[in-house]
Amino acid sequence: MERLLFFIYLYEGTEAEYDKRHDELWPEMSKAISESGWTNYTLFRDGTTVVGYCEAVPDVATAMKKMGATEVNARWQESFKDIIKNITDRNGNLLSYREVWHHD
Figure (spheres, one colour):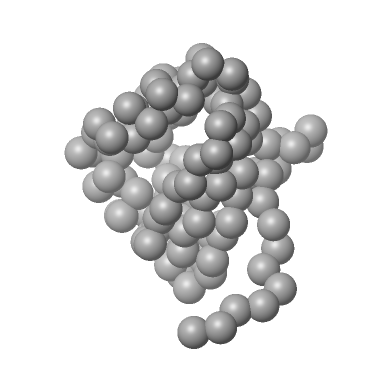
């Protein structure tokens, strides 16, 4: 299992819609998240900044690859183009922090 902390930046004025779409998460998206290996998935939002935390089994690269291959993920990403301003750096990498310490 590998932990992931990531950031999403929203367009100003889309905060309520972002929350609403997650309140109405598609059942097939929830299933794909689980089947791809994502667990303990949580999003926190303050204004236009979203911080996400999740755990990937067996690891982030594998879960990303599996999720990226799903049709529902492509539809979900497309549906958020008008809401998400930025989720990657200029090289296309997910905006994330490296884990340096953990305590159970």
